[in-house]
Length: 267
Image (cartoon, rainbow, N blue to C red; front, side, top):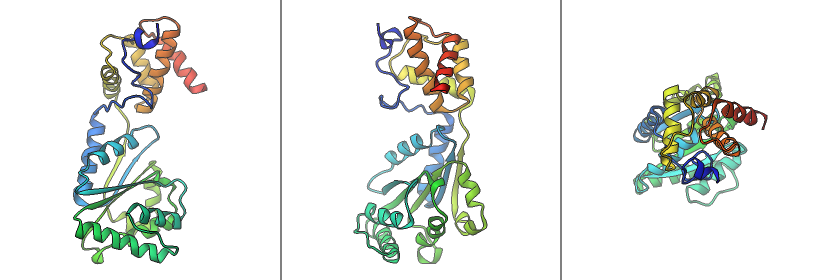
């Protein structure tokens, strides 16, 4: 008997490559509400949260929900880009041919955004993930780059997503002009205990599970160990099921969860 059969699962809902089950916790809904506000308002937005809190999941879901006839989504992960790479990448994503010099790329980006917004009536949505890696040079340029008609209107959505320290970076005096342009700033705090319980039960339900697989105290242990972080809930639940199956336990106990948590921390 494999663990799918033992725990009544059609698939494992706690691993990355499985079918995605979106659990709409109140924090997830609030994140999407804030992002929708940003899409309507346009301008700069900031979405922060510690690793595993669900930023990327929310961003993926939100960007997929935007009407492609009204919005053009451009996603880039900024952990490694130099200033010139950043501009060339943006020009390319906007559908133009990158130039060699920064001023030329600067001009092309503004022209392409204006063309999208004015001629095609599409709002460019530029998502910069891992934005805590952005250098000061790019941050300094952002306000100027997305400044149209002397600040009277925003033509694009520019969303910076990253770790909470991004807020500290933007508090530096040199970034004050950019900070003043931010119209949406939201930090994911993580799930409450009730939300974490809902998250686990919804994931199991979504995978076709109609039986209790965790003792009540064992589920409580998973929730306490994960400390509101969805990624850790997934990790501990997955490890608990694998250990539970190896022990031929139809119900996962606190001891099994403790072993799973220890294994994950050592691994």
